[in-house]
Image 1 (cartoon, each protein chain N blue to C red):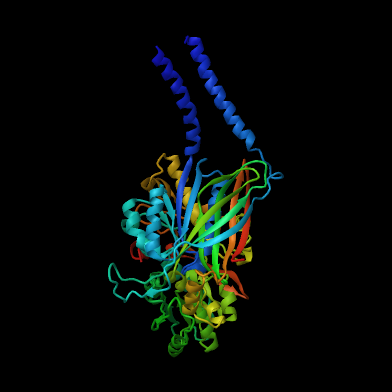
Image 2: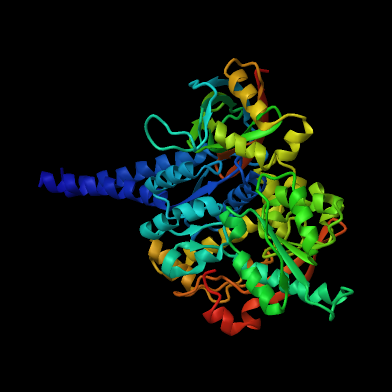
Length: 414
Length: 199
C-alpha cells in the first residue's frame, strides 16, 4: 500500500517536471558556416549577418509552428579543414539543417551531407548541385549560376546588341574572364558558351584573372586583340572591379556581364564609372530597395547589428533572408507532417514546394519548385544594369519557358 | 497515510509547483521602460598560446603528416565585463564581435554560452578567437587588397608585424561591431560595443 502511494506521489512529481521540460524541448537547432574574415569575406560577412538577422525574424514571427530556432553559426574563414571540423561539431550539437556558405565548403561537404542526409542550404548556386541523384541535400532559392549566366547573356543580346552599329552586319563577340581554378568562377562557363553558340555569338579566348588580382593589364591587352562586344566576368567584386578599372583605363570598349558574387553595392564604389552599364542577374532585391518586406529586412539589420551602418550592408543580406525563409518553409511543412528528420525536411518540405513564393515574393525572388528529380529552383531570372551608380531592372528572362526542351533534357546539372 | 491525505499531498505538490512557477514569472516582469541596457566592457585580451610566426606553402614536405598551406596559429581570449544595472536578472542570449588588427578585420567570433547576470552584478565572459596566418593572408589578398595597396605595404609585411607585435602587446587589437543580446522576461535589448586593447 505504501509503495502504491509512493508511486502516485512520484508520478505527480514526474508529471509536473515533465510539463516544464516539454516546454523547454520546443527548440529546433540549425547550424551555420560562414566566411566573415577569409578570402570571400567581402561578400560573406554581409551574408552571414543576414542569416543571423533572418533567424531572429523567424523566431519573432512564430518560429516553426511555434517551435523556436536555436541558430549557432561559425566563421570558418574560408579554410576548408575548419569548415569540415565545424560541420562535425554542428552535427554533434544536433542541428537538423545547416546554412552553408560558398563553393569551397559546399562542394567539400556535399558527399558528407548526402551521406548524413543533412539539408545544406548554401549560397553556392552552382548548377552541379541541382541534381538530386548526386547532391540531394544541397539546396538554394536562386536560379543556379548557369541559368543566371544564360539569362544575363540573353538580356544583353536582346537589349544592347540591337543598338550596336554593327548589328545585322556581323555576329556579336563574347569573351569570358574568370579565375580558371576557382570552382565558383568556372561553374557557369560551359553554360554561357553554350548559350552564346545558340544565339550566334563568336567566342574569343578566355582570360585567367585570379580572385586576388588587382592588376589585370596583360589580360586586358589580350582582350583588345579580340575586341569583344561583351565580356563575362566570373569572379568576386574585388577582382571584377580591378578588371573593369583596367579595361576603362586601357580603352577596352566592351560591356560587362558579371556573376552573382561579383556584382554588389561595393562595385560602383570601387570601379566607379568603369562599372557603368554592367549587367547581372538579380534573383532577390538589392539592399537599397524599398519594395516588399525590405523595410523589415532593414529594421532587423539595424536592430541586431547596430554597429554596422545600413549603408554598409549589401544585397547579400537579402540573399541570406531568402535562403533562411526557404528553409523555414521546408521546416514548417516537414514539422506539420511530423517528420523533422533530414529526409523529412527534404521530401516532405522542399520537394513539396511547387511555384512557392518565398515570403509572398516580398524579397523579390521568383517562385521556387523542387521535385524528386530536379532541384533547379527556378528558371525565371530578372536581369539588372548599373546606371548612374544604381541598379535598374532591364528585363526578366524565363529560361525554362523559353527553352523548355533544352531545360528539361539537356541543361540539368551543369 | 489515508487516501484523503494522499490526495492532499498531491494537491500540495501541484500547488507548490504553481507557486514556484508564478514566482519565477513574477521575478521577470521588466518592461521596455524599466529594462536598462547592460554595460559591456573589454577587460583584457590574452594571447593564450604563442606559436611564433611561420608559413609553409603546400609545396613543402613536412616531417610528419600531410603537406598544405600551413601556418602559425594565434589564439586570443577576449575577456569582457558585463554589468547588469537592473534590479532583476538578465540573460545574455547572444554575443558576437569582429576582431581587427589596425583597421583590418581579421576574425568574427560568437559566444553561445548562455549566462544569467544577477541584478546589480558584473559577470565575466571569455571569448576565444583563433586565427592563422593563411586565413588572414587570404583576407588581405582578396577583400582587403585595395586597402593594403593604398597603405603602401603588402600582406606579408603586415602579417609579420602582427604575429610578432601582438604577443608583445605592442600593437592594439580592436573589437568592432560588437552586439550583445540580452533578455529579461519578454523584453529584449541588443547592446552594441567597441573596444581597444591595450587602451
